[in-house]
Length: 403
Ligand code: SF4
Ligand code: SF4
Image (cartoon, rainbow, N blue to C red):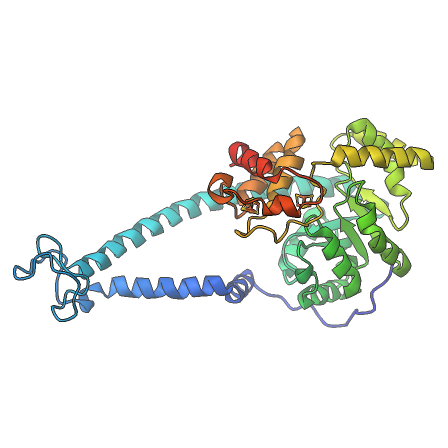
């Protein structure tokens, strides 16, 4: 694999989680605008008694049921017993804010307990993995898929600590938009972590807008490894990417390669994947020693060109109507529905019983809305999809089963 030429001797600079959170907030213009509006509303309701000469329950006998008017001092008018509606609206706002605050506090308490428990359980799994590799570190190539930001040195240290290692081999940035791949902070994070000896290589992984992300990653030039979600049937789209990666010495690891293939067909497909020009290896989840043995046996098997061609044709037919994670629907929804993510929950995770709970977790974390109130007669995402995926069916199914 290609060594990056951008290593510097700069020392890592620590940043607190609060700094990160504030920076993210500052960069989110919609959140900042909402915060300003919210602040103004809070000030208004707190200053309610100062803003009107009337109290919440005093009656202005001369002005019963009058319309809004500046001259009478009743800016919102009065109700049928002469009470000022402006001041009552402000006091009503106080009650609404208190209800919202109480609900947020309750969800915060439950959320923190839940998150801490999940973190503890998740931590246990990674600790067990660390336990398993102790004393055999050099036998493994360890890649960490980073879902936090490239500025988060603490999270990266925590991940390495959980595994009981000082250095991992590959740090995969998990990015799903080509524009994000080009952000300078990934390059800077990569340089800093490499210089600090935390990782040997920097990788890019994506399962949405995948082709564009991989193309952008190659262009950026500092990614040593690409790990796209990939299925047989996507060869034409990815041919150039694999070729360029091979020419530059960039590693290519394929993931999610079992899509649309049963267990037996997948075992046959492994040699086909491994023989593809430009492909270094594949990444496959295995949940038993038996599965590991079967996969390794398949990887050692040879396959003929005719068998590969037959398999590719069969895979294309099998994959027709299934999501191949190409990302063509990424910006298709006028309501910004994360279409590919919802389809992935329904079409990929739900097909695998061991991922069912995970599908629910991913789905409930998405910013989505029920299909029935969203889609109406729209079918933009299905029009954009090159593989005939019945997207609206998946959206409804995910809604019914995972929400
Ligand atoms: S059908 Fe629904 S999810 Fe698809 S683009 Fe239209 S509104 Fe968005
Ligand atoms: S739903 Fe269709 S367009 Fe969207 S990622 Fe999947 S295959 Fe591509």
